[in-house]
Image (cartoon, rainbow, N blue to C red; front, side):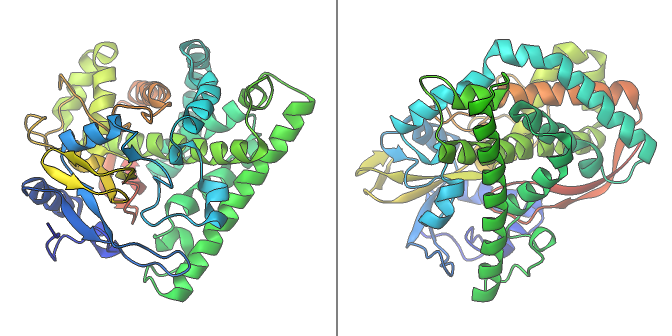
Length: 417
């Protein structure tokens, strides 16, 4: 079934529509008898294919996520067209792999996300949140994203990797370029997909990937010679370790996925608690008892990561739809998280929602987000600090949204306290 003309998910202008209009479009897609087939947009220097099936229902997204043997992450999951080698060298991380390669890398990097290590980070998180809020109070309210939401996740990831504070702003800027490559604010280029603009955007993307890759490679060299006990030391030493290329790609994945998801969840959280004061009062009446469910509801409602791609390894039938080997599908987590068949009143923000089987950290299966627990801890620490220190904090005006079909991001958000 071909998508209707007013719901073209492959066109950048669709992703610049107001969020309510986009969610209504996905509601109409969920109501179709079969997943819509969306023609793919050809990109200069990269190419394209015939198109992809848009998996917009919760049942389809979760089943495809579980069945990694059929719905493959190879050759790539974070790009609709196949990623050329000159991009994959920087962005071809373990999320673009199937087992056994994926299992090996996940086993190595999971050392950084054990309950013991995350527990040790609790005090450091609280100190970091306090210092960030201290600085914001001194400066006065300007931009919640730049002053607060973006700072904690980048600091946490950089501290885990042993990257000195003087490089944190540079890492954040490179992250913005990587995820905002369709947004003129971060690229300086009009989003019109002309050959010239795509070429300029790719050069900026390559530069951002190269600089982060080289930073990780230098750290890896240092830690092989002089281990310090930080995350990089754990990843590059020992019988099972990451190669220099694997370390660089993992760092880009970690700083992009680990910081961007959490920063947008924190920004959306302030906006949602401002728009829904009854939910804010409910949280503050029992913060410790409700914050975990509140974080999950923010993630469900906002869904910072919009979609990932899978490719069929064989002919396969799922929920009445016949797929052929080589077909592409996009798992639209934002739509699955509003599926009326799973969530009662899905467009309502309800921090008491239970159960809440959202797919904001990915669907169940081998690619479920390793950093989900860390993201919840960061959100918990930051909201505790904000609502304790600045009880009158509120967002002001409408957010300035990122133009992207991959990240549901907030670039800027006014606020007062």
